[in-house]
Image 1 (tube, rainbow, N blue to C red):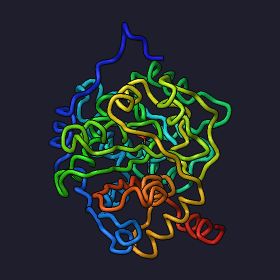
Image 2 (image 1 turned 180 degrees about the vertical axis):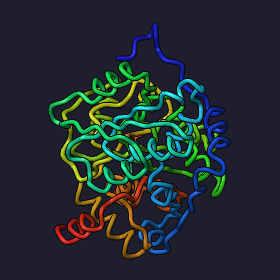
Image 3 (image 1 turned 135 degrees about the horizontal axis):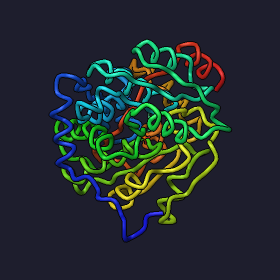
Image 4 (image 1 turned 120 degrees about the vertical axis):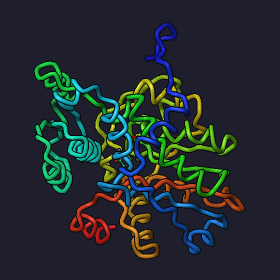
Length: 327
Ligand SMILES: *Cc1c(COP(=O)(O)O)cnc(C)c1O
């Protein structure tokens, strides 16, 4: 719970702008795509910000690189530790390699094979834990204490939030103000960073966070006004299996977001199929949360300018085929 006395200071939009400068020449400025078929289906003008085409396949490179760029020389020498089900791990591992520092990543036993292999491939040391029984944060903190590593959490950190906000900043700079914007939601780093950019660059835009229906802790938290914790949800959206929002991310979301929506696994598979077949884009299940919710909203978006953030594209091809065949 957020106590009034020690409420954390929330990062301002200026931190997003500063992150964008640090990322220049390191992160891709990802393309914004459109689809006549989607526009016709929704009667709207829809802009897809394609972070599935970001380095290492997801927006998380932005937050990780921004956070590691701000390390002191001593912190760089000791290195970084992170816990993650996948994309944050790869983002930290790649950023650490680019900045020349050691990285240790704590990953769940059931993380997708491709993500574990990619993390090792970037030169990081991987420590495996049991998602359903171990406390990954405790493992991360212990490693940090023992070896002097700096722990960079996947979402509840001001530099991570500011970095994630740079994708939305690029979108608004490219297409101008929007009427509605749909952003995938796990622990809220992407959504809270996007919120800072949205309120600065397109203040009247309705901003929606979208999470898996099986794990709607964010929606419950948003509507009740206090952070709600849930068991690890069973969903194909492995990037959004978070159990609770962060204190910082929740505070920004409460202040700046209009509502939290949900999408079912079946809607995610439909969205993945549509993107692959019609737009020639591979998105991972979590990456389709925003698009799935925009399609479900349908009529209400008629005549509007709509942003959809496609957050990542890291899905094994075998898994992708399995999902396409099963639903
Ligand atoms: C991490 C992740 C999310 C959720 O981001 P948060 O900052 O935790 O809310 C969404 N999509 C993809 C592809 C991710 O890797």
